[in-house]
Image (cartoon, rainbow, N blue to C red; front, side):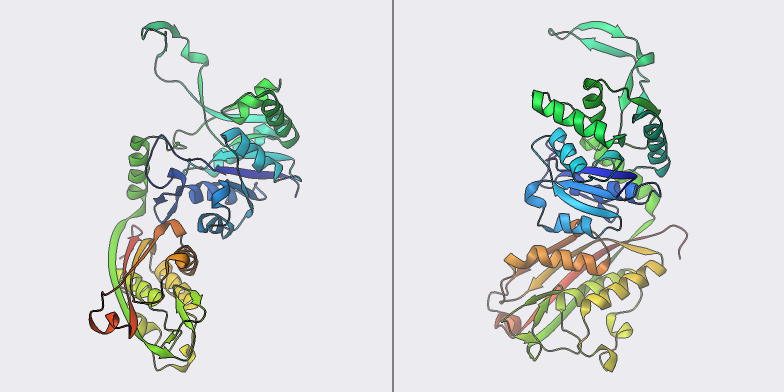
Length: 390
């Protein structure tokens, strides 16, 4: 592949923001922060493909799989110990590119106009960085905690991403820094160290990086302001054991387990999720859209039906923010299948796996479900309704 390739670095641990989920994988308006960052590049007509860099332990998991589902992503590769190592891994994974634009996964509000501006300057000068002019008076603090001096802010800039460069320049600069044991904090610094001139492009104040809790709160505010009204729906489905087909839960087959009775594939998880989403949008239930006496749906794959539901929601002006599912079953144990189920559910509804919650509980031997006669599922769906829709 010639031309320009985007690199999104999503291998960080998010130590400054904290929380159980790294910031780049937090859900933001129906998809993860990192997915938004990736789409900021894939949706640019001037970017021929995007390489996503994740932590090595994520490579075979649902988060990496979600990136592979995004149109325009050409590969997902493992990163390294530092930002510099991960950037180098991404650049090395685009061997045929003439130019690369490296972007932070924690910057979810990338405007295509900024991508175009950085790429133009990169093609012209060989390297470019978007940056904002310092607006406040800048002080340098001494070791004792006092002001050492006031800096001239007229020449000071705050660097953003994506940072662009000729691939050969950047790969040499990053390898050189690595060989010398020098830790650089962005691509422009590596290029500066290698003696390359880096052009400055006016940055975008909206292209914020999520680093602190205040940043996260602002990102949520932006999505909420822009995305319209919230709607909540609840879904429930139950099927008894005894079906001739194999057991399918959340779009994942369970070989060797007894199947459930039902007109379609009897996937209680996806059925409950569909009902919850349809209910939130007031679009009737799955029995209305896929009647149980209609031979077209005999043995139907519920993943296909869920995609149809996703289409119905989209045409009605809704999108799924998240799904939360609770499976009620004595058997089978789903612990080893949870991540695959979350990925399959997310793919079925055309959302990010970071926006799907899934857990299971037993009935402690109480009632028909407790006696192991069937399986049930509760689902809650949160939808956003675009402004201007009824």
